[in-house]
Amino acid sequence: MVINSTGLQPSQGAGEENNSVQQIPMVPALDAMQALASTSLRCVECQTMYPALESVPRYRCGCGGVLDVETNFGDANSHELQTRETAFFNDADTLPSIGASWRQRFDDRASSPPIWSISTDTHLLDASGVWRFRELIVPVPEKYVISRPEGNTTLYPVGMENCGTGRIGHRQIGVYAGLDRFFLKHEGENPTGSFKDRGMTVGVTMAHVMGAKAVACASTGNTSASLASYAAQAGMRGIVFLPAGNVAGGKLAQTLAYGATAVQIEGDFDDAMHLVEHVCNELGIYLLNSLNPFRIEGQKAIGFEILQQFDWQAPDWLVLPAGNLGNTSAIGKAFRQAYQLGIINSMPRIASIQAEGANPFYRSFVGKFAERHSIHAETVASAIKIGNPVSYTRARRVIEESDGIVVSVSDAQILAAKAVIDRSGIGCEPASAATLAGIRQLVERGVIKHDERVVGVLTGTLLKDSKTGMQQGNGGIVVKPTIDAVRSILEAIEA
Ligand code: F0G
Image (cartoon, rainbow, N blue to C red; front, side, top):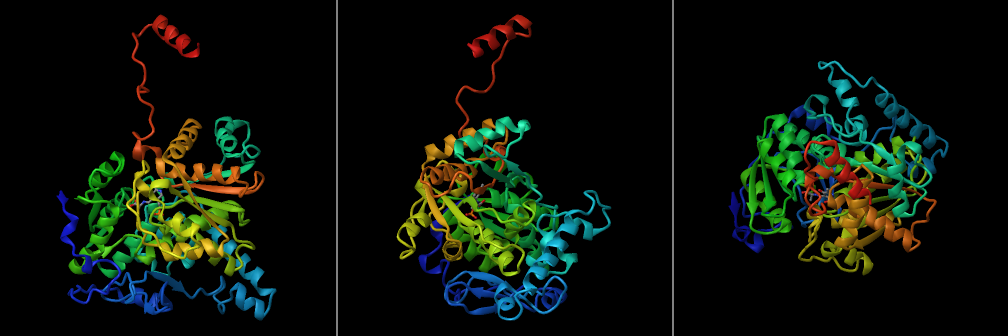
C-alpha cells in the first residue's frame, strides 16, 4: 500500500500538543499503574513531569519536547535509594556495597541454567538480556512481559592483541581499526536480527499493560521487523510506515511474513515519522518508535550487558552508528545510571557515527550544539538515512556528559569497513559498518589511542541487507561436476 505523506498539514505535525484531535483513551492495568507509581516521565526540554501511565498515552510534553523515563531505584536490598551523589554526602563506603549487590543480583540471574521449563516465566525473564536487568528497565509486573527472549549477544574480541589463534580472521578487523584491545558487540544476533528487539520487548510489554489492540511505528526497516514479530507474539495488530523503495529486502520480507500491515509512504523516513505520530494519536494506536520513552529503557540493556560481559569494568570507548539517536541516548543513559548506582567506577566515552549524507547530529556537534540541524538525508546505509532525529536532545546530553564525540563517514568508507567485517566471517548490515569506519577515523586522528579498550556496536545482521556492498559477479561459479573442472577453477583463482 502506498500513500502520500503530504496529506498531513504542517501545523498538525510532531512537536505540537494535538488539541484539535480527539484522542482515544486506553485502559492501563491497575496493578501495573501501582507498580509504576514511583516512575515518571520528564520532558527533556522543560523538565515538566508526568505520570508514567495515563489513559491517553503521552509521547511528548506540552512544549513539544520528548520524554524520558525516571525511575526511583531502591538499592539492591530494597533499602533507601542511594546513588553516587547521595552516598558521597552521607557515607562514601555505602556506594561500593550497593553497586556490588546489584552486580551480584544480575550475575546470579545470568548464571541460571540456560534451559528452562516452559512453565516458569521467571527463568524466561532471567534468560532475557533485557529483563535480567528488570529493576533498571521498568518495574512492570512480570505477567505483562512479552519476551522472545532477546539479548545475550556475542561480544567478539577482534583487536590485534585480544584475538586468540582461533580468531585469525577476526583479527583483520583490529588491524583495520588500528586497535589492540577491540571488541564488537553483535546486536544482529537478536531474535529478529537487530538491536531493536531490546526496546521492542519493553515497548510491546507497555502496549500490553495499556490494553492496546494495535501498535505502529515509522521505520527504515529494523524497527518494523521487530514490531511485527513482537506484535504477533502478543496478539496485537502491527502497522508499519515505511519510506517507499528505501527499505532493505530482508527487513520488508520479515515485516510482511510476521503479518504486519506495511504502509509505504511516498516520502522519506522523516515524513513517515511525522505521519505516524499523528495517526497514532488520532486513531488510538500505541506508538512504538523510540519517541516512546519505554523503548529507550529497553535499549539501555545493550549497555548493561556489555558491562556484565566485561565483569563490570567499563571500557574506555563505546562506538555506535547513529540515525534517529535512540540508541545513543539509551546506551549513554545505561552507563550514567550504572555509574550513579555504583555498579561501575568510570564512564565510557561515547562516539556516535553518522553517514556523511545523513549527518545532522554531526553538524550540530561541530557547531558546539548551538543549532539543531535538519537535512534531506541520502546514504547507502538505508537504516540510518534520517535527516531530523527525534532523540536529538537526549543524545546531545549523552555526548556532552560522556565527553563524547560525533563523527561523519562517507558511504565509501562504510562499504570498505563492511567488506572487512564481512570477510572476517562476522558480517553486518551497512549501517552497522559505520561503527568500524568511525573507529578507524578516530584512531587515525589520534582521538582513540591504539591501546584503549574499545567496544563497537554492530546493530544488524548481514542477512537484513544482503545486496548492498556485495561485489558484482560474485554470485559463485558454475562448473561441470568433475574433479578436472573444479581443479582448473581453483588454480585460476589462486593464480
Ligand atoms: N543501525 C541499524 C541497523 C538501524 O536499523 C538503526 C535505526 C540504527 C543503526 C540507528 O539507530 O536510530 O537509534 O540512532 N533504525 C531505525 C529503524 C530508524 O526504523 O529500524 P538510532
